[in-house]
Length: 216
Image (cartoon, rainbow, N blue to C red; front, side, top):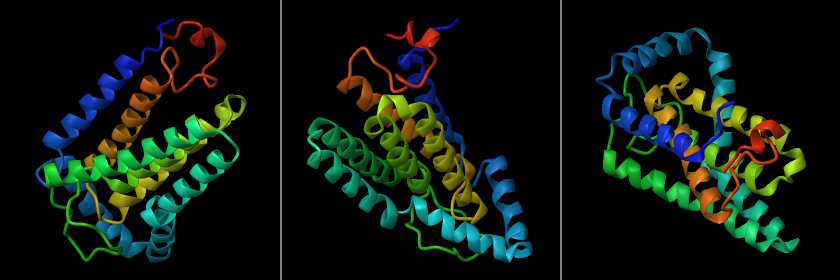
C-alpha cells in the first residue's frame, strides 16, 4: 500500500492553487458557465437561497474569529499552551496569507447581479472556503484528542466543503476561487503541523494503523 507522504500531498495542493490562479476566473469557461447557471437557479429557489445566505455566515469572520479566540483561550486556560499557540498561529496567519494572495492576484469577482452578501473586492482565493478550512480543520487536527479525530476530521472537512460550495451558488465567487481556498487551508495546516510535530502527519490518530505504520 502506498505510503502517505505529506510532501506529495503538499505539492499537489500547491499545484492546484497555482493552476486555479492562472486559468480560473472570468475568462475560464467552466467558472463562467457555472456562475451564470446559478443566476437562474437563485431566481427559482428564493427560499433555499435565503437558507444558504444564513449558512454561509459560518465561514465569515463574525463567526470564525470569535471561535478561534474562544478555543485558544480554552486551550490556554486548561494548560495546553503550546496547542493554543499552534491553533491560533495556524488560523490567524492563514487568514493574513489569504488576504495577501487576494491583493497579489487581484482577480475580479463575478458581477452578473448584485451581491446578496457584503464582500471585498478581490475574489481569489475564496476567504470563506479558505478560512473555514483553516479554522474547522485546525480545530479537529490540533485541539481534538487523537481518539476523537477519526470522527472530527471528516466532519470538519465536510463543513468546510459545504461552506465553500455556497459561494458560487450565491454568485460571489468563481468555483476556482473556492477550490483554491480549500487547498490553501489544507496546505497551510499541513505546513504548520509538519514544522511543529516532526515525524507526525495531520492525520495521525485518524488513518488506520496499517497506514500510520508507514508514515514519515
